[in-house]
Amino acid sequence: MVISRLFWQMLWVLRLLLVAAVVEDSNTETLLKQLFNTTYDVDMKPSDDLTVVTITPNTFILLSMDQTQETIQYSEEFLLKWFDPILYWNKSEVAYDKDWVKIEASKAWIPDVIITNAISIDELLDKDLQMADLHYDGIIRTSLPAVVSSPCPLKIENFPYDVQKCNISMGSWSFDRDFVAVNSSVETLWPQKGRIEGNSEWELISITTVRSDNYDTLLESWFSEITYIVTLKRKPVYYVLVIQAPTFILCTITIFGLFTPNSNEDERLSKVELCLNMFAAISMMLQLVSDMMPKASRLPLLVFVVTAATIAAIVIQQVHHHVHTSAIRPPNWLRCLVLCDCKRRRDSVSEASTTSSVEVPEQTIQSFTILKTSLHQTAILVRDTLQRMSSVSENQLLWLKILDKTDLLCLVLFQIANIVVTIVFWR
Image (cartoon, rainbow, N blue to C red):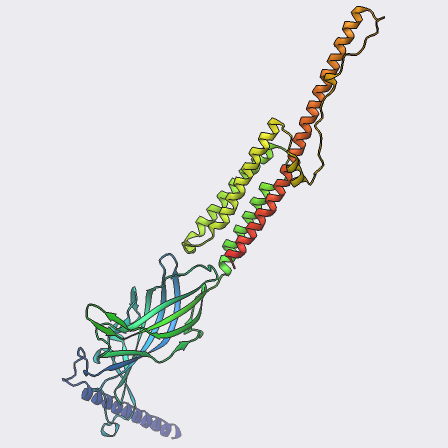
């Protein structure tokens, strides 16, 4: 008996809810028929008076930035709100008791406010599926969700620590500012998780609003326009790990390989070959990452350092080859400057060749006199030859010491240049 009573009570409640829903739907349908009568034309502006459209950025999510084409792609939703002098009702005269009513956007006149500097716009909803909210006092609000591509000229003087500013301009396409004017409900937007944010490469700093009315010279009229300035800051970690560190390491290895002191020409020639291999490695690495970098990047400056080091190594090699074959004595000023050896050294001059002949005793037999004289002259010739060879070896040793010091000096100078260029470029 109790179960039967509960069943009938539940059935009665369901009937009441169903009747209320039917009545509500009936009231809504009656209201909409009253508003959208045969005299309302969705293709005509409801009034010749000025229509002010208030824009509210509800969503902005950066999807990507094409640095070669200098464009950005983002997902957005801008809310539009304006007053329609025809679509309003008196709450006391209708059975519909709510302040807002949901209508199909295609049934009402919607101002043609668009992103005027967009390259492409992919709307997320078909026009037939778009809805709008209508307030009893004639206020209409709707949204424009879309994926948009817009131009964004890059300034990459501080790459990869650069900050970019991209403009999003919005306004009416066909009505000048005497008929349709736009303004923004906010002056500045700050990042919000899931609504206003950048991506993995770019951090969104802020979105600021400026008025940017433009003049159409063909129509000779002004058009109302709002520009949202999107400030983006690059996250440099990727470029530091993938480009900066490997390039700096390769340049350092090349410089040390070139200017480590050596003992002969073959080693110096092999080091030049090592430099050329490193140069090819750096060029290949830059080629692989070129698509991910701005075209005006200053990274090739590091390559110029390696190129200058290679030229210096080749010059030192040629000097070494020349002095090794000619065996000329290093100038005193060069020894003093490089080796800090400022003592003047006299060249070893063999005076033996000018020495008078050894006196031969008169008692010696004439045949032995000739033999001794010949042996003595031969000994003098051998001694002079050994002295000249010793002088050549000494000169070659001095040049080797000078070139070794030059290598160390070039190593220090080019490594400092490598560090300075890296710091200046990646500051």
